[in-house]
Amino acid sequence: MNYRFALALASALAFQWPIGLPAQEAAAHDHAPGAHLNERLGKVTFPNSGARPAQASFLRGLALLHSFEYEDAADSFREAQRADAAFAVAYWGEALTYAKLLWGLDDPTAARAALARLGATREARLKLARTDRERAYGAAVEALYDNADLQTRVRGYVAGLRALNARHPNDLEARALLSIALQMGGAGYAADERKERRKEAIALAQSIFDAQPDHPGGAHYLIHATDNPEFAALGLAAARAYAKIAPDAEHALHMPSHIFVQIGAWDDVVASNERAWAASRAWVKGRGVANTQLSFHTLWWLQYGYLQQGRYREARALMDTVRAVLAGIDWAKSDAIDARYALDAFRFTYARETGDWLVYGGRAPRIVPPPSTASSRAESFAFTDAYGVAFATGVLRDTVTANAIAQSFTGTGPLQAVARAQIAALRAQARGDVEQYVASLREAALADAQVVHFGPPGLYPGHELLGNALLAIGRHQEALEAFQKSLELMPGRSASLLGLARAQRAAGQIEASRKTYAKLRTNWHAADPDLPALQEAGT
Image (cartoon, rainbow, N blue to C red; front, side):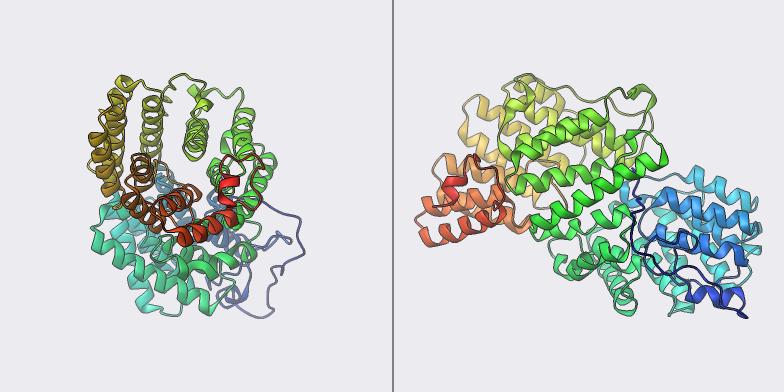
């Protein structure tokens, strides 16, 4: 998945070499764009020992890295290496572009190959560092690519960055890298440690955002660290700023929507991802790469935004977009994870949000074959795809197939627990066992409350599904409480607002119901005129 787009924008500050200053001082004052005169990627500051011709490319690579524009960042770091073959930090910078850990992608083989071009061993490479500070950066990156398990590598990287920050407390780049490093490999930490790391990452990123508001890492990493209902308000200022800081980075156009989803700001979600999808299309065209490299992540978030706005026709049309851009792809030769699972994800999301299961054509869907290359991202997509197939199959009353698929959900995490319980609920519903149906949905909802909710949900929101079931059997107060919990976990969701308004009205809370319907009308201000519940919400 690529995140890069060069927009035709007003000129940014060009790279200029201050006369009479040595390289290490000059780089402390330069913007990243360098020779890319019309690019805006934000401002980074990294005094270094590299040769003069390497500076522009190195700083550009660093700015791109902070916006997760990994492919373009790697290109820029390699350009800096060509300008100064012994510029060690440029090789360590390139190595970091292969650690896409927040995306569930890790390529230590490629990173180690990049490092090997600098020197054959860790010790040989560190000897090439021209300053103690650069050597400290190198030691941290080398720890990330030790021959060890991922959690050990990340802990070593964090330890190296902590040491670097202790020696250079005013180095914003070291602070930025530590902020995002603290957010890597979260599944390997206990809940208390994850929360403490999140708080530390927030404090670090906030300090950068306060000190240098146009630093791409400060805004970006603050958004990531606060991408949680409990902390989202702390990231709103960064979300409003980031796309303006680095408008030539596609990821910077998309990333603010992580906070906008958390606060139910659906117009902002849609606007962010419409811009980001256009940027992704242009990036793919400009690079001449396959459409499998399009940002289907961005497009899926756009679909979710449309659905929350009640723009069902546009949300459904995006499925046609997916089919069109991926027509003719030979999946036996492509391991593009997001593209491989895109159509199923879009179809299930549309059916779940609208209740229109006819989108499956009345036939049980099939599980998408996994890619040949394993990664935690691929595993996550494969699980979500299998769950969606099982759920849709269960809704279509083929509970035998749904149950057979659910047998593969053997993990111990809360998502697997949600999936198992919801499929069990569909089986109970099919045989008319209402009490077991509700009991299984309660089990799913309890597990769902343990999930860290961010972005569009891959599974059916547990409390929302429970609330709908309780409402259908006349247990209005319990339904009301379930919808309230759903909105606590995922603020502003239209389906949960609709359910809550109905439950409040059924429970005799007429004024509360009117207020909830008013919130729903705000979501649906641009909704399709024939939206089924639109007239109801207007009462």
